[in-house]
Amino acid sequence: MIGVFDSGMGGLTAIKQIVKMMPHEDIIYFGDTGRVPYGTRSKETIIKYSCQDVRFLLSKGVDAILIACGTVSANAIEILRSEFSVPIFGVVEAAAEKACELTENGKVGIIGTNATVKSGAYVKHIESVRPDIETVSTPCPLFVPLVENGFTDPEDRITYLTAERYLEDIKRFGADALILGCTHYPIIAPVISKVLPGVSLVNTGAEAAKRLFENITPGGGNGKIEYYVSDDINSFKSAASIYLEMPVGDNVFKVDIEKY
Amino acid sequence: MIGVFDSGMGGLTAIKQIVKMMPHEDIIYFGDTGRVPYGTRSKETIIKYSCQDVRFLLSKGVDAILIACGTVSANAIEILRSEFSVPIFGVVEAAAEKACELTENGKVGIIGTNATVKSGAYVKHIESVRPDIETVSTPCPLFVPLVENGFTDPEDRITYLTAERYLEDIKRFGADALILGCTHYPIIAPVISKVLPGVSLVNTGAEAAKRLFENITPGGGNGKIEYYVSDDINSFKSAASIYLEMPVGDNVFKVDIEKY
Image (tube, rainbow over all chains, first blue to last red; front, top):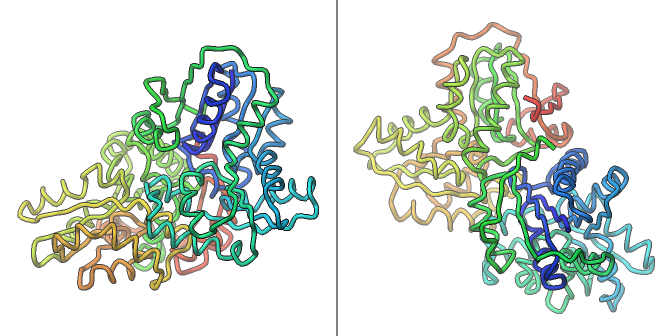
């Protein structure tokens, strides 16, 4: 049984990929909808919240954990791995390596939340595997609220102008591969592609799910998915289909995450 | 000593007004920067968080509390008043009454977070004092992240287009007074005025501070202000001046709000 968590709903983009590859695996998802977003918070707070998230998933008996959140993967994975003995997968390594594979001109762009870009995690991993590759990183803090508030139409003018402003440096730099360093961003990939035509986009949630698949032995379950959130279950149910492209059904429960 | 709290930094717009009117009053401010925003959360979560906020302020010995947050005032004030015996002032009543005073054509617009608009609190209060006044309410969920991420220049094209989209119904309705039902919104008042020229804007934090001033006996302190936040104090210090138009100094402390 795999545990997956995110600050909110973005991590559902990874669930979609896991279900495709491991249809029989049982999954416990936790989305911290009562405290989302994480990407604007300090490293200390991100660590505190993500330790609680992991403790909750362990209480459900998961055998491995996928951090389907760029901010947590970039800021807390080392501490989580040292605190807990369960195998923990993040989104940074797989996505960074995929970008190195995809780039032809050796220039990779990285976008993420403030906390993710500040951590330098993607850059450090790229430097360790391919020191010849150049990078430019830009925080895009308004992308998460744009996605969460439904500004997701590929023709949305406001989202386009925001992307154009944020991606100016990366465009000038001439990256031909871009890491979408936050699991919310694939939802507005069509808009990002309009600003950066021809640039290969790396979906971090999907890459992390593939890495997980290569590294664990499927648990042989019934493909049952349970969703836990820290705020209202009904608003989660209605919004989840944007990320998941399938209904979440009735397996949605509320959890008092502060107690973990 | 007065306690003031908000989900984050918006409530500092009320502090500015309190200091102007009661320069000798001691103030304890709490901004829940570790869990901001509240306006996208459920009523149940807003109540839970705001009870913790009040318990923290009471632990500091405050004599009265100003809820400098539209979302909490609209969703939790009745419960807070029934749970705690300290006088509690919110932003709804004073702002609603001010809008009734300002309107000449009897049409008042209300904007706020999703939770504030859903509560109907401003509309209910207007109906109770001036049933002849018509209202239209619109949630503007992207305004808080726009302000918090610095899209505050009066000429900002993205903020303007967002305001134009959100305020379309209110413009068509023909309101001549608009309640800025969230204490973040005064920061982008110049943009809102461009979309709705000639419309009187009601600053809820400032009106609430005036109402507080009319109803309490100043405590005769030294004008000392202490700021408490639930996330990193340094990011609070650097951002607070946008709202406060004065430096916060070194009186900023971190509190573990989940324990209250």
